[in-house]
Structures are given as structure tokens and as C-alpha cells.
Amino acid sequence: LPLRRTARRGAPSCSLTADRGLHGAERGNGNGQQAQGSHAKRGGRADYKGALSVSNNRKKRAPPSPQRPSTLVLMRHGESMFNGLGLFTGDVDVPLTERGLLEALEGGRSVKHVDFDVVFTSRLTRAKSTAMIALTQNDHKKVPINVPGGLTAEDVADGGPYKQMRAAALAAVVRTAAHVLPVYPESALNERRYGILQGVDKELAKRVYGDKTVGLWRRSVSKIPPGGESMQQCAHRAVGFFGTHIEPRLAKGENVLLCAHGNSIRTIFAHVSNLSAEESLRLKISTAAPLLFQFDGFKYHFNTSALGKYERCETVWSCNDDDDDDDDAGALESYEGTMHNHSMIESMLEKDSRKIDGLI
Image 1 (cartoon, rainbow, N blue to C red):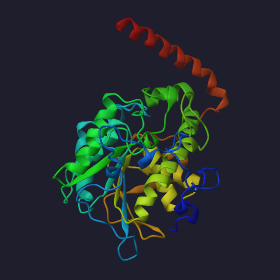
Image 2 (cartoon, rainbow, N blue to C red):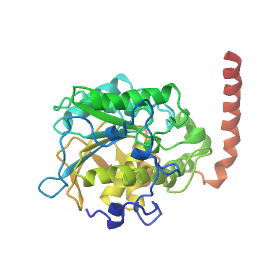
Image 3 (spheres, one colour):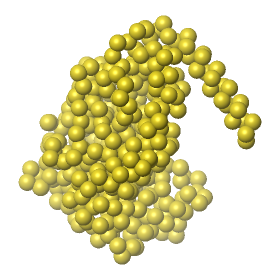
Image 4 (tube, one colour):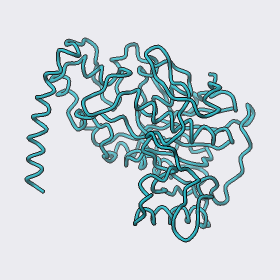
């Protein structure tokens, strides 16, 4: 599948429309800010910015070619506790279940032969845990080191203990005698925010709002759940970060593991596979099943011999983003006709909020 020439040059805006796929990537950290990257001062007594691009005792990679391509592995996190309970998760930070831990181990074993140079995850625990656990199975025995603030140094500008932790992590990447692998958690790769639906039982949400409304919120390009974000907004930040910070590394021949979430991975998968928006919305991304691409400098090639699989669903409504098994076909109510139920959910949440306030 051809890599769009504009994406390789690195700065066009990212757009997701009803009849076109994801195009290019906007510079920055996915949140409308110019990325600091390796140009920021890293704190402590020394400047460890070199650790952001070169870890100790790492092989120098040659630029990718058809004979020696670089490798990109996309991996969704393992099953989370909200997944297991049938609740909308979004960007709520919840841990893995026991099944999720086992899925992460199995996913790691399926790509254990890949000699990764760098790892990117979302800021959420379930993605970071999945990456760390998967890497324990890698044949190359590199020790993953979490770098607080990620590559873009978010949340560390004001100093304090968090900045000290970041400086210590970067120093360890440079100094340690072990083979290490920097792990950069980035908010641009977080799961799509579902707003008022987060933490709500999926079946209850469909009874209150109607199947079609919930389906539109989940599987349309521009519809936004109250207090949440659209797929278009999720694509803008996720693909924007990918184009600015990850594609240049692949172009240098580096092997990259990206561990994130159903929706953020779906948009990146569409970007590298040149899928239309409609096709991307129909993808079902399995938990902790690696999707392996090889980049030869010009094209991304999906490697079907790896464990990861994806499905092109027959209808938009048959796809799900949080590992549920519901079928969203047979919508009963219009989008506009069910908005009055919004107040019902708000009332329920307001009561819950008063209960919580009473416990604090």
C-alpha cells in the first residue's frame, strides 16, 4: 500500500472526512502545541537530550529498503477491568484484568523476534502495562525504561519531583550497563474520550439513548458524545503525533512498538494502510494482538504472518471499540429524537457526585 508522499515530508494537516481517509500529519504533540522534542532542556545537572534519540549500546540502523525494511508494531492494550465489566472506558485510567495480563504476554511472544529501538504508549496504565509486560518476552532482552513526560516532555515544564523522575530515567537510559529500551508515554495516543458515557454500562446507554444514537457516537466521523470527542478529533492528535515523531524514526530504519487503544490505533492503521474513513470505522482491533507492518522507505506492508488480525466488518454498527459483543444493527431512534434522555443520565451522575462528595 502506498505511503502518501506528503506524510513522509512531515507537516500537512490531518483530516478525516466521510469520503476520504487520513491524510498526512500535523506537527506538534497532538494537542495543538508545538512539540518540544529533543530541543527542550531535560533538567537535572546535565542535559540528557541525547537519550531521546540514541540509547546506549544500540545498533545504528541503516535507512530502510525492500531488502532491509524497518518494523512498526501496533498493539492495542490487553483486556481492562472496564472491558470485562462491559463499561465504556474512553480515557478513564483503569488497569488490566488477569486475562489482559496473559494477553499481553502472548502478544509479546508473537513479536519476540523484533529488535525494537523505541516504544511509544499512551499515558494510560493499561497501555503502558501491556507494553512493559509484552517486552519481557522479547528475545533481545532489552530492559524497558519508562520516561515520565514522554518524548514531548509534557507535564514537566514546571519542575518538581516529576521532572526529577524524568531526568533520572533519561540518565539511566544513557548510563546503565544493560541494553535498554526507552518507553515514551504520550497523551496524543490516549483512547478517544467518550465524555458522559465513560463508566456507563453499554446496554444501559443503548436503552437510554437508543441503539442508533450510541452507534453514531461510536462509529461516525464527526458526532461527539456529550463531553467527549469525535473520531476526527482523535485522528487529528494520534495521526498527527505519528507523522511528526514516529514516521521519521521508521524512515531512519528504527523498529518501533506502539501500544495504545482501539480508536487511536484504528486511525493510525488507516493512515499507514491508506484506508478510507468508512473503512477505518469498520475495523475491529483485537486486544493485545500485534499488527506488524514493514516499511521499505516508500510503502508500508502489512505482515499477516504475525499474530495480529483485524476485521473489516460488513456494517459500521457491527464493530466495537471496547471488546464488547453487542450488535448495534437495528437502530430504533433518531439522533435528534433521543437527546432529551441526556438529562436523565446527567441527573443520575449528579446524584452519584453528591454521594462521592459525602464520602470525601
